[in-house]
Length: 256
Ligand SMILES: [Zn+2]
Image (cartoon, rainbow, N blue to C red; front, side, top):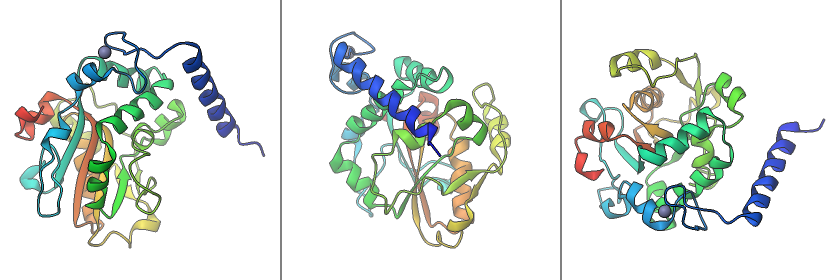
């Protein structure tokens, strides 16, 4: 049987490449010609959460930009965020997720790669046994056609550490953007489960959990809580973008 999804995807990739050949890529913020990602280097700097400057060694050789997060540090041992969730970063993620502008997937992935170059990336991944992702619900995946965190961070590590199917969504959750922190916590409670094949494999493991946006952290914390229930010894988070409010909550406002 023809794999229609695969053909559709390859067609889109070809269109993307053709577009790149015809018209030069321009910075989404200032319009200057740029070769990689959505921004020119100057505009990229203005949106970066200054990740490169805040790598500091810790016992395990790595410290996330924003440090531990969660009640008494119980949920996320560390949290690394690449971009500020504001202005055009916010707009582009919105266009990708809610208006299905799929070409942005490749551009945002390039931005993630530029924000997390190979040396710090290797250091980050070396501190964890496995890399997992906050899963998009099956309904949303069906509608959207792609899983944003999984795609954006697909460059992170080799197959031996990547576990894209480790966490599952076991029930539907409403969109969270209109809810307050308390409502968000309630909305996501119990919405994740570790997939059956992995249940016996997490004991004592350190897991890096990736997501696209960190606003109140309720989704990531719920994912981390489920990983811990299944025996994970540590859970760190990596997010493409985070809001100022989230950084303030983490007690490291200056880092953003
Ligand atoms: Zn620019």
